[in-house]
Image (tube, rainbow, N blue to C red):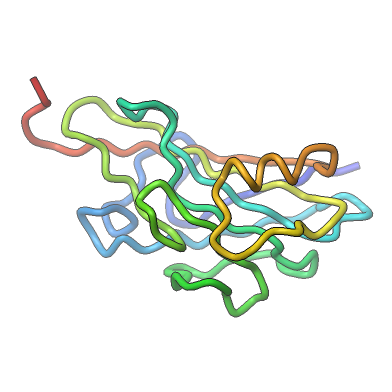
Length: 160
C-alpha cells in the first residue's frame, strides 16, 4: 500500500528554500502537493516549523480541516481564517494567521519542516487555534503523516 507523500515544486527536499518564500522575499507559501492518503482520511492538517530557532521550535504555519478531497495548496496561499479549498488557518508564532516564511537570525542555516497529517476526523477547533491545540486535538486520529524539509540561511553578520 502506498504511503502518504508530500512534495513541492519550489525546492528539493533538504535543499535551500528560495528567497521568495522567506521574510527576505515575498513571504509567500510554497506550492504543496500530496497524495496516497490512507482509506478513512477525513481531513488533513499541516504544520510548518523551525526546530533550530534560538528560543526553541518556532511555528511558521498551522492549517487544519483541509478536506480529504484536497491534494494541493497553491503558491501564495492567502492568510485569513479560512482558505478557498476549505481549510482553516491557525495562529503561527508570529501571532498571525497563515504562512510566515523562514526568517532566521543571520548565521547558520535553519531547517524548516513541512508536516502533513492525514486524520480520521475533522478537528473541533476554532479558526486561529495554536499548534499545541491542533496537536492535542489530533492525538489518536493520525492515520499517516509525511514531511519535507528545506533549509534557509540569512546572510550577514551572525549575532554575538
